[in-house]
Amino acid sequence: MNTQGRYLHTMLRVGNLDRAIKFYTEMFGMKELRRWDVPEGKFTNAFVGYGDEDTQCVLEFTYNYGVETYDLGTGYGHIAIGVPDVYATCEQLRKAGAKITREPGPVKHGTTVIAFVEESDGYKIELVQRG
Image 1 (cartoon, one colour):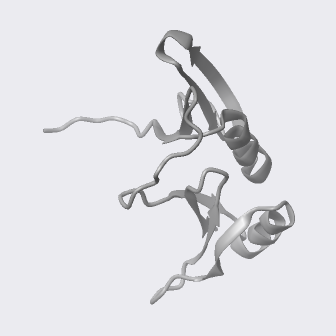
Image 2: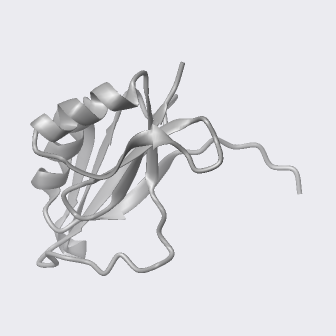
């Protein structure tokens, strides 16, 4: 099969939509792109990212009315965000109250500098030094 497409988004279920949006916009400089409330379905979707959904991959948050927490399970890995300086980014995030779960440094058996941050619903974000 030969299909050509484009990676659109990653969906995360969140227990508090405003808290999730605040985390990604304040800590990572993303922007809320759109929000879609579906009362008859008892959920709200919100999309955040660095640019227009027509050209950029984004995060979709789904808030199901009345559900405050989720079991993250063992299958989920992480979201990766490229940054110019992982060390400086972690310092800024730490000062802003973010939880750094893996301090900056080279990957095991490699040279790429990474770190991990835990966001407001417990999802892991890998910071990867780029450029």
